Amino acid sequence: MEIIRGKHTSFLNASTLAERLDGYDTVHIDIGTGDGRFVQHVAQTCPHSFVIGIDACRENLHEVSRRAPSNALFVIANAQVLPPELHGLAAHVTINFPWGSLLEGLLDNDAALLESLFTVMRPNAELEVRLNGGALSEVGWSLEEGADRVRDVLTVNGFEVRLPITLRACELRACPTTWAKRLAYGRDPRAVYLRGVSSVELLGVAAYTTQAVNLG
Ligand SMILES: C[S@@+](CC[C@H](N)C(=O)[O-])C[C@H]1O[C@@H](n2cnc3c(N)ncnc32)[C@H](O)[C@@H]1O
Picture 1 (cartoon, rainbow, N blue to C red):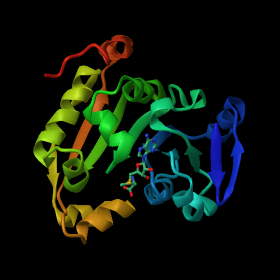
Picture 2: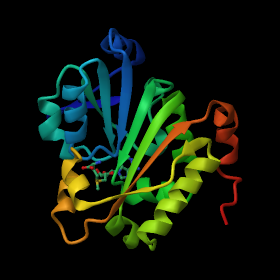
Picture 3: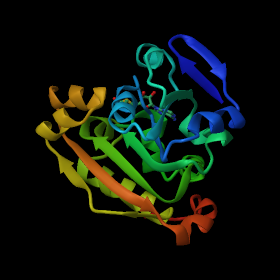
Picture 4: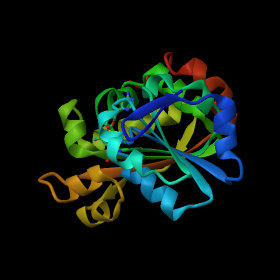
């Protein structure tokens, strides 16, 4: 898989990744990581975790990846086609304030995205998704309906997801991502938080149902 440090990109194979992961308790993957500040924060505050930030856009990653701690790694990849080297690794996945094909895939029950998400997760892995009102309204959804829709999509694909929780500006300010801060101090600080767990029972069938399920 393609990794980035500063402006330098290279390829990392599964055995070299396994060496890097050796000694860590758990793997956390942040999808649509943007500039990588959230990954940097988690890596610094959870030294026993190995944290992997993934984004399709490499330019924003130059600065943070250059001074990434040893338990952080940045991967250039499309969320719909996550690299096989990451399969079955993550005990924890976050998707913070997605936009573009990442957000649309969650709303449209995109089979490639949902399968890809599942393949990197361990059984009973935790998934956290934060959605913001502006990004949802740009693709035709209100914050409440969009949050319910993403929850339904995740549920039919084998996640047990709790009810959405509204995030206020003060909670966004405390959230260690660049986009959360922008939202908190911007004109539209509306966001929701979804938290779920990948269900062991449904894990096996999820890959076959993503396209077939009719969400109404
Ligand atoms: C609004 S930014 C949020 C960045 C970061 N999570 C934060 O909270 O600061 C959304 C990010 O999703 C990424 N993204 C959108 N579609 C993607 C896809 N299909 N695969 C990987 N990343 C994607 C974009 O490149 C962008 O960096």
